[in-house]
Amino acid sequence: MYRGILFDFDGTLARTMEDNLEAWRAVTKGYGIDLKADDYLPFEGLPMKEVAAHFFTINGLAPPDVVELAKLKDEWYLKHHRFSFYPGVEELVDSLAHGRVPMGIVTAGLRGRLEKSVPGDFLEKFTTIVTGNMTQRGKPHPDPYLAGAGALGLNPEDCVVVENAPLGIQAAKSARSYCIAVCTTLGRGYLTEADEIVERFEELSGLSVIRGILP
Image 1 (tube, rainbow, N blue to C red):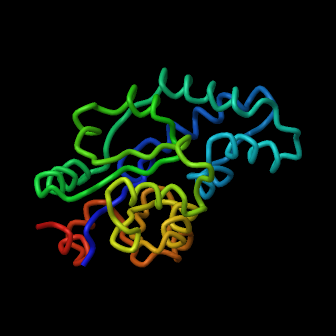
Image 2: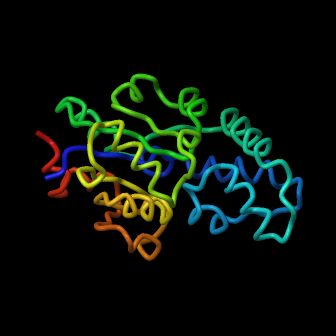
């Protein structure tokens, strides 16, 4: 019996990965980088400055000021994004909130971008929100999910994690949480380390492990 649930955000709760990819493309294009989806999606979840450095490393280039580049990326995103939730997200979150289930968001994104792009009444339903600048190490290290579980007042073994990317799954499993992967941005072949895999977020509410959390 699990007692709490922790969600990744980008690509798990919200359909934002397409816009995040376009933002990274926009700010790296001037350096001669032609960014492909496969350069980014499997590495989603890394701290933003590490993501920025990764793009230059794989292209054999010396990284510029990656902190500034990450800032420019978020600015581009906020100007051009088309935010939406995946089908079934709001219904499941409402059910969890109504049942007073401890739940949190654990994301590599920064708090400012969340608050400027996500409806406030949605964020208020979560017991905690752990963002990319709140732990010394980010995904794939367990630190973000350990922090999330601690903020819920739970042991990580008592939590279910919902993820969409390999590094997030590794972080959840390293924290000893039960992990469900959703094929929203990557195929099953990338997500094999998860305990369960579903094709769509809507399928989560039918899983026995989720039904066991709901009162």
